[in-house]
Image (cartoon, rainbow, N blue to C red; front, side):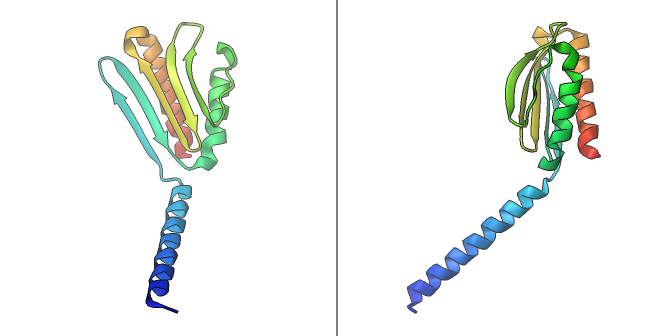
Length: 127
């Protein structure tokens, strides 16, 4: 075996081990939750173990059932408008969720409702 082949083999092996480590760490689902609020917007976001996603989508579907029966799935990205005109953007993917609301287009009670939803999702992630 030539010196170049040995170096190439070691490099490929190292890259494979690094990729495997990265994929393993990502699948562990490190939990990160944030809330960002400005005068204009409210945002809630979370990154969590993807195995908790069915619990989150079930909660959202139950929470929104009386509002027109949205079908929130693991991969969802839509503006939600509730019967009381509460409006927010909801994005979900495997192990991630983002809720963003424009305060200028929502009543104070609507923003409170969205905050409450974020807190309940946070509690579900923590379980």
